[in-house]
Amino acid sequence: MSRPELQAPPEIYYGDAEASKYTNNTRIQQIQADMTYRALELLNLPPGEPAFLLDIGCGSGLSGEILDEEGYVWVGVDVAPSMLEVALEREVEGDLFLQDIGQGFGFRPGSFDGAISISVLQWLLNAETSHPTSSPPHRLARFFTTLHSALRNPSRAVLQFYPTSDDQVQLITSIAQKAGFGGGVVVDYPNSKKARKVFLCLFVGDGRAASAAQQLPAALDGDGGAEGKDAKATFEKRRQRESRREKSGKQKVAKGGKDWILRKKELYRRRGKDDVPRDSKFTGRKRRAFF
Ligand SMILES: C[S@@+](CC[C@H](N)C(=O)[O-])C[C@H]1O[C@@H](n2cnc3c(N)ncnc32)[C@H](O)[C@@H]1O
Image (cartoon, rainbow, N blue to C red; front, side, top):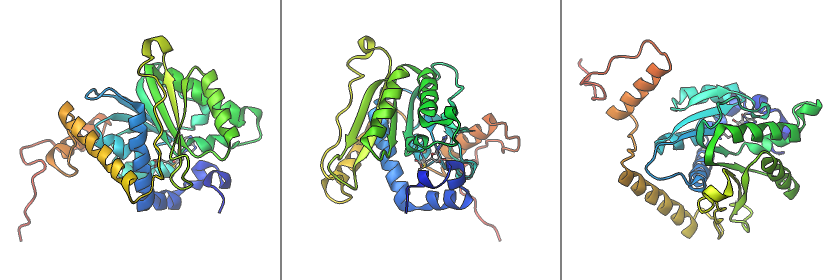
């Protein structure tokens, strides 16, 4: 079976059926979650501070769910209406935009403290039409230039993607550089066919001000297998992150609990929903059934 990005444009490929199949696949959920955790690690945000993030190609919110869990405020953009529909059904907390990233972003300069993108960039390597301004280099240039402007100085963008050749990596990094980014590519588990992951780790900001913070992070090594010490290391890192979050006072909100319900209601109010029930001392309490 050929790669998804070679089969159809994203908004067609991720139609209703595929959007639901993709989102409910537990293996995909696990892989996307792990790559999102790793992207956050590479983003290297200051611990304990709130951050406003952009999730590029957010899809149905598998990556966004981790951003929710980690307490970040985020905006997601995606070109596939069916994926965004599923994200809405799943009640992710980010604000969602239907948008083709190859057309560039229209966000205010310096809006975001960072950006992540999980399994999206390879889609921009395929021409949508034969029109010259729809060629991959044109689309990539618009994408990186407007992304650079939407990010705060200094900050980072971390984009995991699936290149098929070194030439593709070269094309992407050279266009990102021309758009003003520093940084480069971090390849985790480079010697494992299965676990190898490519992260484009981009820096905004001049080298002098941010030289210590803006050094390309080290890649993970080993075989990255699901069993053994690599998996243990992943969970160890997750635990470390959780303890860091506890120390910083950032709360992980239990799904379905009182705080979670209050947060959802606040979100709906901000989105202009007018039938949100009032908060009361009974909010989040288990209801008894009376017969
Ligand atoms: C493999 S999914 C990943 C979704 C999400 N990041 C996750 O972790 O589950 C790839 C997503 O990229 C989106 N995408 C592809 N090309 C795009 C484009 N030109 N503009 C915006 N989104 C795009 C697709 O619609 C799809 O939702």
